[in-house]
Length: 175
Length: 175
Image (spheres, helix red, strand yellow):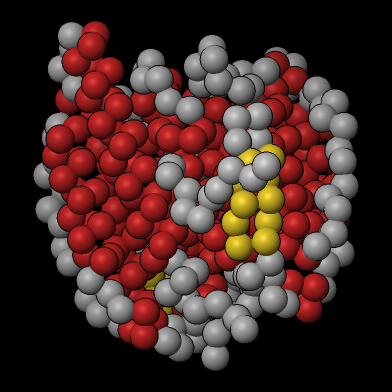
């Protein structure tokens, strides 16, 4: 038995997006407890020439919905990138989760060999689906979710690794 | 056709570890150009109660070698966690790459269903191999490599996303 492209992608995106939502909610709670406007967190950066939290969440969303759509051979929905508050970003994550949940596993059959083309400002990348998932979609996705976590953590939100890993399925306490 | 557990794990770890090595080398070059001791970067943290760069690299190494060993059903080698300089951390990444390259794809056959047990201070997790790879090994690995990148970027090392994604295989410039 081998694993399917659906099994290697969609459950990863879904669990991690749910964790990202919970992390952003902890950001809101932190701001409220410290009596500052949660949207201030949305503009924070780890370096002046790095992207702010808003863009980290938007790009994580794009990485997940773009990967699912490209592997299934459908057009990804266009989101407007007009989020400004943490509540907006949480809604963006919810929309992304809804989109990912609309797929059926069989839509990914054979996608490991489907040719995926990624135009970027500098270069157009062309990969077989497996290489795209492994070396483009998943690294990009985890990069931006981790950076969102690091931004909030750097700004005082109380987070730990289990917030990032989330509610693990099939995990049971052994003796 | 479906994909194998080997294909879904080892190439990801290998490419990203090579990228981590190049990122650490840029850290050394940055320190030398600014005339400070590169080992100072090894102690930096994004928050006072987060782990320093040294531990981020050690845990990324452990996530990769632990995942490969557990999926293949062998004991992971124990590394001493005695790295202090960036050169030490680069050597640690090299040792991890060497270990991952020692596996043959057939050692991972059937590992999607192998029971994997992860003891942690708070709880022991038990997963089928696929769930372990998807929700434990890959997220942990990417979390610590991204945090290492963010730490160096936050401290002035000139890095961009392509340093994180690395030299992508099978990527060609289209017309």
